[in-house]
Image 1: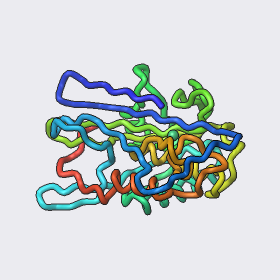
Image 2: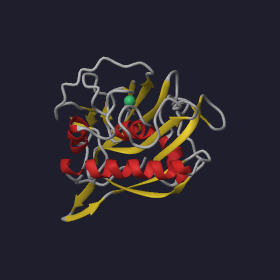
Image 3: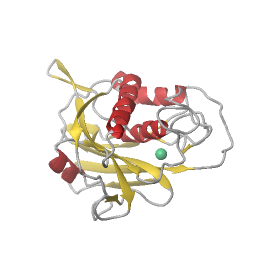
Amino acid sequence: MRLSRAVPPVAVTTGLVLTVIGLSGAGTAAHAAGGAGHYTLTKAADAFTNTTKVVRWAPCTRIAGVTRTHVIRYRINPAGQRGRVTLVQRAVAKLTAASGLTFHYVGTTSYIPHFDSHGFLAAAQQQRVTGVPFVIGWAFEGSGARHSNLLTGTEAGVGTISWKSSSVSQLRIVAGAVVIKRGGTAALKPGFQAGGSIGTLLLHELGHAVGLQHVYTDIGQVMYPIIGPGSPAGYAAGDRAGLAKVGRPAGCMTTPSSPI
Ligand SMILES: [Zn+2]
C-alpha cells in the first residue's frame, strides 16, 4: 500500500490512496476472529470543517432542503473480453447492495487509469477522456499502451481514489480507479466463489475505490490483503460494516462537489 497526500497552497486538499493486493498460492494463516469491527477506513483532513473526516464518495447531497442521490458514473475497459463487463457489473451490484452508493454503467472505454508524473492518479485526465470519475479496467503492468503504472510487483490488482475538499466543499472522493493485471489472475477461480476468485478480487479493489483499506487480522474479510484459499465469496460482516461507514448510511453531503 502507498499513501500519499498533496496539499496545495490554497484551501484545497487533494489526496490519493493507492492500495494493492497480492496473490498467494499458499494457504495463509487464518486469524478469523470475524465480527463487524473488522474494517479500516481512510481518513484525511477536510478543509471545509478543519477536522479529519472519513474519505468517501457523496452518496447523496442535501442542499437547500433538496435531497438528491449522487450517481457515480463509471466505464469499464475489458481489454477485449466482453465477459469482464458482466463480471464488473455484478461486482458493482454487490457493492451497491452493501453500501447504498449509486453507480451507473455508461459503457466501455479504452482508457487505462494510471499515475501522472507526480505519482498521483491522473484523475482530471481520466475525467476528461472518459467523461466519468470512475474507471475499472484490465491492463498489463508497466507503462505504455495497454499498460498501467498503477500495477507493480506481485499485485493482481489495484484500487485507488483521489479526494478533494475546500473551504466551500466537504471532503469527498472525486475520482476512482480499479485496474486488474492482465495475466496476473490465472490462479483465481472464475466468478464469485469462496477460496480465491476473480469476483472476490474485484470486490476487494472496489472496496478500495470507495475508501476501505486492508484488514490484516481477519482472512475471512474481502479486505484482507491476500485473495486466496481463505477468502470469502462476497463481502463479510466486517466489510459490510466498513461499507456502511462510507456509504449511504453515513449520510448525505451538504455542499456541492469541487471540480476535479
Ligand atoms: Zn488491497
